[in-house]
Image (cartoon, helix red, strand yellow):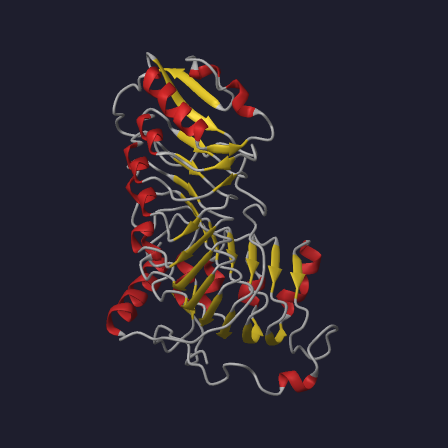
Length: 399
């Protein structure tokens, strides 16, 4: 704990005394591990129970709302809506009711129904609904502003549909939402900073067309899972990255257009299990503090322009199951990295600049290292910062 405090103090000093830094663009391709082709099929169990509900929904009002929505659905190849007949909405396929203590609509799950249509304002009367799962359909149009009235809603999954336009800001006003899944749509524009100040435990916006720089307050998010993969984000990873959020377990930034260095603060994510920044244009050497990721299982740095020697500190991570550094410009790795094969750890170092190893870049490609003159922002120290402690006996400044 004391070691972590040393690193945190030094990072805080750096963050508030430096004027800042910026970098340019890049390209990449890839697929995130959060489920290609659509959202999840299970119920999210993270987050907390809403502190209060607006009261039971009237089933007559629910009938009116669901019939209005049925009228806005133009194609139902599986015939699901053939059951949406009569006033007993609790018998409708995909509609779930519970006694609280009166009977109310508590959830709608139409995942993989292949329905085509739009969402309607009338859905806002379902104020006892805790989950709305609509992934893998063909819904389009706008997300109604009235959804902010869904005071009990905790899970909203509209992934793998045909929604487009700017980020649906109404989702940020649903008071008890903890799970937000917008992936595999065609949303565009920038992400609002408020996305990372809400009480969301899971944020999935991957596989859209979002652009611009990552909001600087991204580290303020209390989420345990953040997936921003497969968009068109540019600029650098926020310098405050990993300073605030100690509960983050997975962050996926792959296949964007990010540049610059991996921030030194990444080492403060003590619970991080998945860190994937592959398919970007990140440069420079790895920060020593990456050795602090003792819980990390998947570390994917492939398809960037990283350089230097891959240190023992990275290859010695105790929970590591897969380390991918392929298609960079690393010039070598040491003994601990060679031992990864005997630990049954997946280790892919193809297409680097490592002498004497197979499947490396042609020598002419290694004569000029991208970003060779790039100076990564690091905590000033006369000794290397490793896992929050000051070790070694030589000055350290990563190029």
